[in-house]
Image 1 (spheres, rainbow, N blue to C red):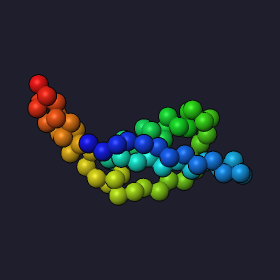
Image 2: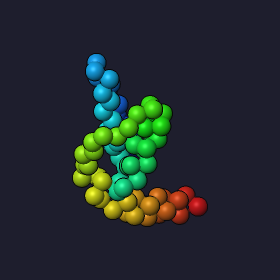
Image 3: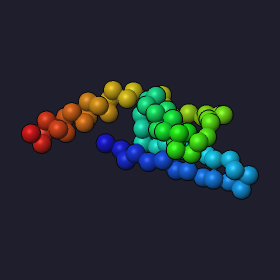
Length: 71
């Protein structure tokens, strides 16, 4: 399972750039929405990485396999 993280950059002009890493599929947008709320900001532009287009189902199956091995 990949490590999930968010890198936030705040520029002198007040612009905020956030990169969500280690999150597969469209669920990365959940993290972006939380950031919007916390920072009282609005997303005005998005650029998606290759992870956005990867199948998030694969990660869920991997987590289930790890849990089955533990039990």
